Length: 460
Image 1 (cartoon, rainbow, N blue to C red):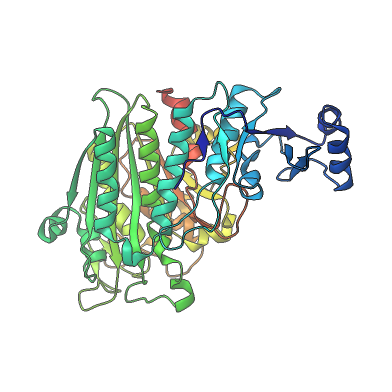
Image 2 (image 1 turned 135 degrees about the vertical axis):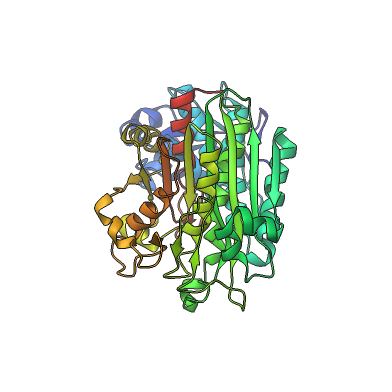
């Protein structure tokens, strides 16, 4: 895809940010024909609106872009799809450097297209790099979102565990990381028993990806991603409509890969480990069954109540492995429960944490980057809903109540004791198109977590 940004060019057309409060002042600086045009067409500078003002010769003079100062990220996002493919420049005016950077990121996010199978009919406009803005930071943020979106949008026929390995390997090459990708069936059965069980029925064998980057001695952050490349539900087969979007059930792994890419591109002062369990939850003679008892990596026993609660089994093995890394922080991402979508809808990422101070650090970057996340409680009295008559716990509460909470409580059984932990239960998908957020795969929580990491450990 052609770059959304270009170097300065004399013919670039000015994009002038405006709010309802500043519109009169901004119009006063335009030509009389431009002022009349804006008023005749009812432009009020409402956030997300765009008004192109003609010059005397009928060509384009300037473009007014309405925006919300509380959400500068989307200042230019609507303009990307509204304007003809020419060069534009942001008229910074009173904008701070941080606001201009966020506007540039929004332009980049709005320029995203998934063109693997269908090419766009028209080129997109390009933005001259705003003066003083860190190009590297903008590019890192845009690329991380692009990677995440591309992976989620790719159909399962073209993205199975081996392709997730290839995506991780590309990061290894680009950023000088190291990686192991475990695929041997006997080794998986011995070291990651739940991942082996969930992926056994598929013709595409499961993989466990472990990527490492950064200097030993720095704060050690472990990212964990659920990489269920397609979820049929297993023997507890999903109905057809519920299976339609299950290519996105590896969205947690995609977000973890995108965040790992961002951390390395920005050279955050941490040591990073990325763990991904890549599987297909298929149906076949080797599929795990309701009533089976599995023994995850830490030796606890888990009775299978429902084979469609497979993601938490994948994460269980990975969270135990995360604890063996002796981390300072563990963060997992998963498209785990429909209950979380019922609780907060599709556009907010639900999260759980065993550390209130850590959870509180998410609020400010989530607001600043308009990356909404919302805490749900690890309500320990609900632990009884996971009791089993024959094992240490069941993988799914048969009652159906508090599904997101009981899933998080299940995961907590495998989290290293005394280590701060964040668990994100996200949709990873935009069900509607909005400026900068096209319909399809989405990196939910990525910007908020970046802000948390930079607050906690500093910038690179």
